[in-house]
Length: 400
Image 1: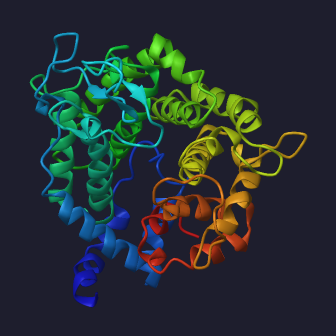
Image 2 (image 1 turned 45 degrees about the horizontal axis):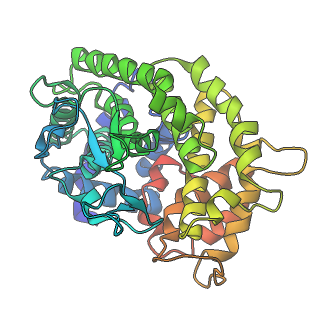
């Protein structure tokens, strides 16, 4: 570790004096990145471990070819390959018909057709968020231009270059063969695009990401947000009562913040109190709309992640969704406390339906954020039960 971090320490003075982005990075708590820099400079071991892991991840991300919607082998119903396209993951050929149409739903069971990259853009859209964020954070903390250069290439390929860019809509996402060409539920697959666009601000100051490219990315985002807010697919997803509706709010609020529309982001977060928390969570913390799923634990965690992410965005929008509570006690905290016994080294057995292996570690960022928001050490103590928690990126995005 000493050999790896010494070069980083040498350039730390320049790093700390480098110009900060013109706006916050909304994927982190307000002021978090600056605190993480200071922790690294002071020799904090947890921050240094997290930085070491980030640098390792960024080095691996350098080898990721820039994804593009043009990589699929089939053309969307529009006839334009620049349109995003995917098949609904839980729909399978109909055994009662000769041609398998219309496809029928098997909740929680992923049809391999929906992950076939010759037909679906799903995995490519997922990859762009993680790749750009990792590289952009790598550049922010080290000022190594190689990270900015590749992040810029990935961003331009997906959003800007005429030959490879995606059209700013999700009309043909999660199509059900024999039923439709796309659905509002497919918008769930777009959540990593805001993550990538947000992280682009961390490239500020790099010669590889000029202001013109930042402006062009924001123009793409304005068109997409307009489609998200006004299209039928967007309105359908906004109306969803379960995790789909929450992740819609996350996307809309995230893009609004990226584009400087703080009032819109605040409006979304304010409405999420009664509209999401008040509808989705019971007074004892259960999430009934997720508990009816065949992977009830996974979906309870998934919606909690969405609510925690939205609460994090609300901090940037000037509203504290963490502390929203209905008269009968429904809140993000009660939902988290319901799940806490099923986390950690010795979790309580989950007795409801869960047809595949779960990934409880995915809620670790929510534990850290909740620990900070509520000042409750129980969440931090639980986080420490996970051996790799000191290396997690949350140590940089939400340092204590």
